[in-house]
Amino acid sequence: MNRTPIKPLRLESLLAGVLNVGTWLASTVIAAGIGLSLFYRGTTFPKSAQVMTAGIGLLILLPILRVIIMLIVFAKERDYKFAVAAAVVLLILFAGFAVGLLST
Amino acid sequence: MNAGTELWLFAVSLGASALGGMLGMASGIFIVPILTLWGHVDIRSAIGASIVSVIACSCGSAGSFLRGRLTNVRLAILLETATTAGALCGVLLAGAIPVSYLFFILGVVLLLSAHQMLAKRRDPGLARIQAPTGRSTTWQLNSSYPDRALGREIDYRIERLPLGMALMYVAGLISALLGIGSGVLKVPAMDTALRLPIKVSSATSNFMICVTAAASAGAYFVRGNIVAPIAAPVALGSVVGAILGARFLISISNDKIRLMFVVVLVLLAAQMFVAAFGRGWFGGIA
Image (tube, rainbow over all chains, first blue to last red; front, top):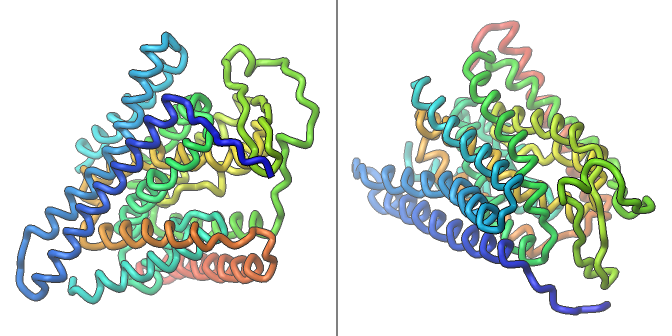
C-alpha cells in the first residue's frame, strides 16, 4: 500500500482545527456541568444546569462559526459563488434562532 | 431529576453511539426511540437532546475527514443551503405535527435504515467512465481525493445537482422533525443523484450534518425545548461513544453484526408504529 502523506489544503486544515478545538471545549464545559450536578446531588445547586446550558450553547455556535469562516475564506479568494452560498446558509441559521424566539 | 438519571442517560448514549460508530452509523436514530420508550422522556425533549448530540458527533469527527482531503467543502456549502432550508421548514412544521405522526415518521426512517444496512452500497463514482461534461463543470465542484487503498488520486465529478439539492432539502426537513442527522436520507442523495465516491459522500455528508442540525437546534435552544439535564449527558455520551466506536471499527462486511443491527432497527420501528397508532387510537398515553 502506498502511504504517501496527504497534504491537507489551507481551508480544510483551518476548519479541522476549529471544529476539533471547539468540540473539545464545548464537551469539557458540558462535562463540568454534569460533574457539578453529580457533586451537588440532592442540594438545589442551580449553577450546574447553567454550565451545561452554556456548553450546549457553545456546541450550537460551533457550526455557525464554521460557516462564517468559510464565508470569509471564499470571499477573500474571490470565490464569490460559494461565498454567496455561505452567506445564504448563515442567514438561514440566524432565521432558525429568530423562529425560535418568535415561537416561544 | 436525580443523578442516577444523568448517569443512565450518559451510559445509554455512550453504548448506542459506540455501536453505531462501529458500523459507521450515527446514533441519533437510536437515541430518540431509547429515550422515549425506556427513558420515559417526552418526545420533544428527546428530539432536542438528540439534535445536540448529532452536532457534537458531526463536529467531533469532521476534522479527520477534512485532513484526509475526503470532504468536498464547496459541494457541502452548496448543499447546505438546501439542508438548512429544509431544517427551517421542519422547525416550523414541528409544532404543528401531532406526536403520533412523529413516531410514525421515525418508524419509517428506521425501516429505511434497516433496508440500507441490508443492501450493500456499491461505489457509483468508480463504476463509471469519467467524462467531464454537463452542469457541474461550470460550478467548479468536480474534484479529486487521495485513496489510501488504491494509493492514487481519484478524480470524480458531480452529476444531477438539482435532484441532489431536492433530496437534501427533504433530509434537512426530516433531520429537524426527528432530531436525527438523517445520514440515512443523505446517502441515497449522494449515491444515486450526485454519484459521488463513497468515501467522499460519507465525509461530505458528515461535514454537512452539524450545520443542518444547528439550524433546528438554534430554534429549539431558544424556544427552551433543549432540556440541559437530559441533553448534556446524552451529548457527552454520544461523543465519547463515537470516539470509542471509531477505534473498534468493525468491517462493514461483517454480516452477522449487520444482521443483528437490522433486527434491532426493525424491532425499534415496530415499537415506533405501536406508539404512533396507540396514541392515535387510545388518545395520549404517557
